[in-house]
Image (tube, rainbow, N blue to C red; front, side, top):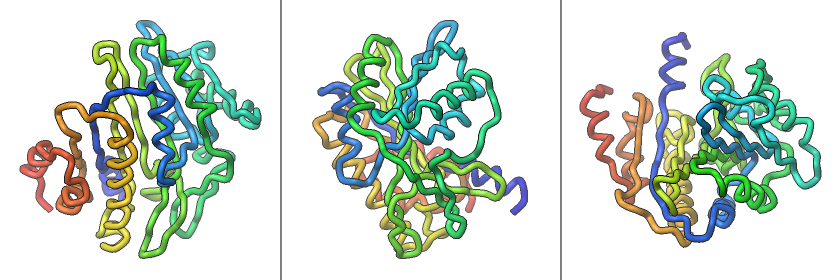
Length: 283
């Protein structure tokens, strides 16, 4: 695969975005993510933008995707990064290392110490504890007094590949020589100008949703599982979807070529933006 094809693959993704009410507080809302067993939270990174310096809160065991994405735009010092270790204290040294990488822009390993690459599939597996209400309650206390907060959640999901259930997997190598990417990332955003509301974006650049990559049966199953979890667990967990309705976004030829499958899988989403993209798209 040449460099151009690699860059095109890495810039392709799909996302679902929505505005929701926040009736029970952030900790209770985050707890809904664990329902159904589809998504298991591995790491949380929260950012409160500041005028001169950003404040960051981190917890978990596999924050490498956050480091990779955030080290070029975060304005932080070592003192502006808050660590919340696991209740066992087993990841204190790991979080200290992540804080150093963020504040000093250091190079980093592509895999977490508890992350194992499955060479035959390109997926990674997490061999360590997941997060629970202990971290969620602490995050709620940290973010509550802040005007604006952006929260990224990283986790393992159940994957079907070539008709075989591959249990829980975290990340995937999309192109040779590149860092593995999360199978999905959840971003929550709260701002003072939109009190009582949460912005949600579920995003993925993985090919596990594409029929051309893993076959129609597995791709359809993955999309249906994600869509049902999103609708029933997130959008149906006591929250209210605010206008406008959730929106489906597709970017890049691999996803745009299969837009019909995504529209079918997410019937509760608006697709106005797809028309704009598709007008200029040629398979």
